[in-house]
Image (cartoon, rainbow, N blue to C red; front, side):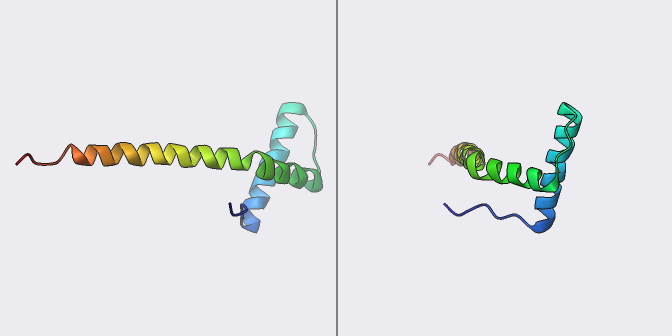
Length: 76
């Protein structure tokens, strides 16, 4: 599987979200370095499971839509 690649802007947004979460939930202020390390851990270790679940959900959705198409078939 190909590695996850995010734009610099998206990475900055995600790091800021992590920093905001830690501050709001645990009253802990993270440095950019710690937020980046945490984000890289999430992407490497948890990201693939989220990605695989998204693929499975998309497969289920598309399969259901294909089955609906066969319901439109005209009887001869």
